[in-house]
Image (cartoon, rainbow, N blue to C red):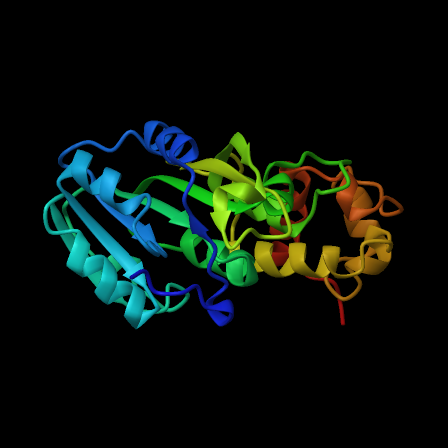
Length: 264
């Protein structure tokens, strides 16, 4: 008897065999990989990944689901279960020195954005992340300047990772079926970020402020951080809107802010 999905955990369990095969092929798990799955649920991805790799960490918040999975995983390999909230889980403590992490997950849609930022802040090497998310979130992650979906998530994800949209997954692949399409994405962290940023925390704060009211121009959106004259001196039009700027422009604005803050 499978444990039922719980709405409060945002659970939608994958069941389509063709989609499962496609995801496992994209991940390409190998023995020796330091793999960790977020939200394994009933094990649709867990068991074939575990079978291929031989060992897998899994982070699951639902106690009943974790117990069910533990009872069914024994024949496939060594499953190391962590009953925990992925938003608060210390991924850096998994296996220090055992090689870069490979993260796989069907992320709950109700916490996907904060969980993404948590994953992007991991302090140990990460080889790649293969994530299933609401299609709209993946579009935001991959969006280019000027596109409707472009925003804070685009800038901060692209500062840390190469974003590869792999394929879309319809609602029918899940039980219960969500009301939206999903998408599978590969994130490959850069060894070195593509732009030089003096203070990443300040970049995050500046980008958050810039996109907090999208219709404002930079002159108004960055009020209190940089003056119009300072923005113009960086080769950026203070009358443009934040969604027109690329990562390099945001880095210049942030660096100037740290070096030469506006008079208050």
